[in-house]
Image (cartoon, rainbow, N blue to C red):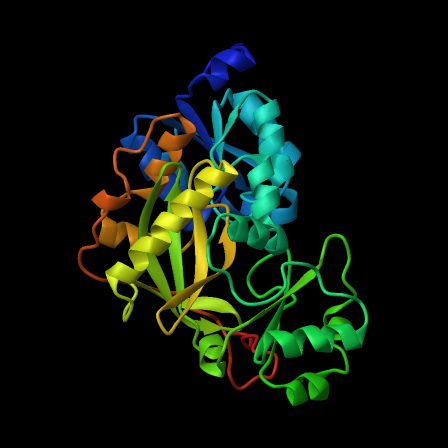
Length: 369
């Protein structure tokens, strides 16, 4: 166990122990990466996960709360206390939970530990779709047509913006993912039929939940949109992956390499993402998401964390993205650049949704004995 009496300066100069603040598949991926890098691991868990098989692989395991994620994995104070008690030199948040929580990132750094992820400022800036779009425009990255500001309150102004952008139109919350406060209007009529005001339908914009319009030039690009997710490290970029199918604004099937998109088209986009990362001072791994249509890429958002679909990129590129992320946090430069990255073979990842299509709520019926 790392000496808990070490000063903040000594612990931040390097680390040999990582606290994993997550569960399930991503916790196991981080455990394996740490073992391969010769790092000790501390696993925090809820009471529901105390008997999880992957917990036995950690050097130390500590229960931090009840089954409810809000009282365990999302409890910043509990995670930080566990890190201090065990003398962790770094905290890896995985994805979900606290991975994109700027306040948590800042608290970890202030406690003298390394947050394995971007800085709090990067999380705050790129986690806001409006701010992220402005940064990408400044970096010369092509963006989805639409204003780079929040929607006005009055209905007439909203309709005028939608008409200028061109239908179909998507309204998305500036913060959050997974289709949070997301609505699609293929035509002006559908917009009016579903609600007299998209703003009213989604709730009044506030400081924490503003909205930005996004559109493409055809219905197909929205209903069967193809995303190119480029995993980034400072000074370099990785291969790309493709989101070939969505369900309720959630990715269902991931595929790499992206079918139907020539490498000579993807290359310049990857280089533009590298340039954007350097311009915004981004640290570690992140994902740029694009819509692709008729030979053109259009930026929509950035995820400042690992992705659940990154294994498809790892399989075809031969790069362990979790290891690369940890090395970046240790200050170790990448040993590859964009020109070194080649894609070999083909990989798929499928998300299984427990839904009952016969029920209007889509929620699964109770299992019958």
